[in-house]
Amino acid sequence: MSKQENSTKINLIDLISNKTSFIFIKFEDFCSPSYPSEIGCARVQNDCIVATLHTFITPTNCTEMQSCIKSVQISQKTTGIPVPWSIEFQQCQPCVKYDQNLLQFGQLLIQFCTASSSVLKNGLGKDINVQIFSDFEQNNDYVFLVKMQKIETNIENKILSGMMGIKNKVVNVNDVLKKFFKLQLTFEHQYTNRKTNSCAFHKKFPNQSARLRKILHCALDLALYLAEKFVKQFYLVDEIQTKVIYQDDEIIIEW
Image (cartoon, rainbow, N blue to C red; front, side, top):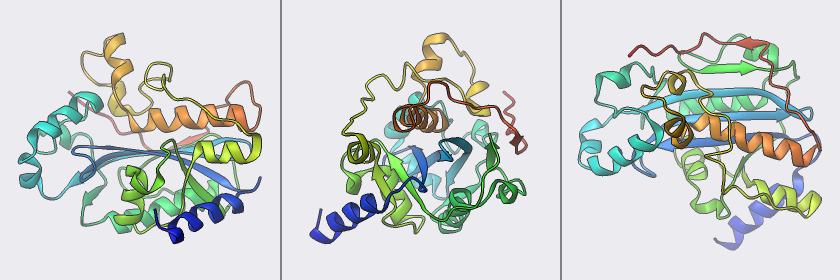
């Protein structure tokens, strides 16, 4: 990391206050880090989780992806998401195409991070599923929180800054906890102790045995897992309130 990049990271952490909205974000990918396949976000504001966002992303160049079929098949086993050239993938209803509309999607993502609940209830676009758990006001002060230590090599940071045009907005969750409480969270059980199948797609994944449900890497599940652990530590909350008061039309998967 250059001195300038390190300074940017430190300054961003220093700017965080009790008015900052925390956006927990997780990408899944077909062939790390070139092909993002799924995005899940959880927005924390007013001391609680107020909204989530979930959608799929499809690459425009499937021929190029087929050249790295082994990597794609490995990621398919962990995410459960079909390969992009399959008929099943069309039922994921992806909202943006890789290398074509990711900059445009970046603007929709910023709107999710900053807009009020009343604005978000008007919808962000086709195939973007937004859930709202409580009413909240507009807030332009936000950061993305991820669990990786090296922000410059983190896949979320690479996709946000390199593909969506959202730069210098990613902070490690433990850096924030260290600043305020001298605490560090551990995430070794994030795949087994989280709530499973938060999104409509993974709820309907075939052969969903208890073992399979716990190893699937659902981007929304993981974003919510991080957000819930953070809220309990940062705000000293015992129970997370996640009663949905508004939801876009849910993406339904037929197998």
